[in-house]
Image (cartoon, rainbow, N blue to C red; front, side, top):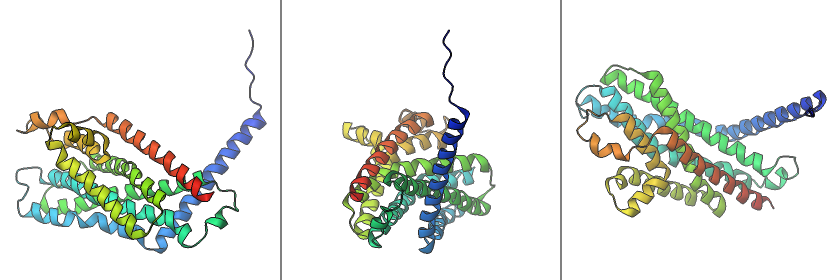
Length: 284
């Protein structure tokens, strides 16, 4: 029997050392991108934004607007379903324009070409920052719901709610990458990018909360390819139960989390590859 050739120990150690250096270099790029945003006080703004939407919802719950039991669960469901879906993609669109336009505005792209940092790694660092901000926003939303829950009812199931909110934040961030393609491709002004991000957010939001009510072929197509409606179909299954009178209508529209993750991951991967390609052409 022929024995397999083993990679020499020195060669393996070199490979591991090279990969660790690449990972460390990527972490440095991520820290650099965070530093840029920190100077503009935008990280604090992301956290503050997560607390804005729960305020009117908490007031509504305190006035008995939700009705029934488990008021805190309903408050959390409203914050995740409405607050994160409406605010997070808009905020991430603005952050993406800042991350991808800073080098252009300060004319530092030509300086970056002289150092051994590929466009792929730069894009990867910027997108990692977007995902980290999406996670920060989602965790801040849970904190906001807990503050509101202290006024309207008993706080319960915190760990489960942290997991749900974190998953929702990551999925929404991944679903925002298609609009980042357009922002990077046109490379226009901040106002153009902000308007584009708001339009994309409203389109997704309206399809999630209005489009699912219609069974026309066009609506079925849009709610099956747009990220927010796909994510919302998973949330529908979490925040409804067979005891609800409308469960028979909603149940066929729900999607399990693994299916949602696969669809959103495909959208995110295609978007990432397109952003890298566009950014590479800009450097050339």
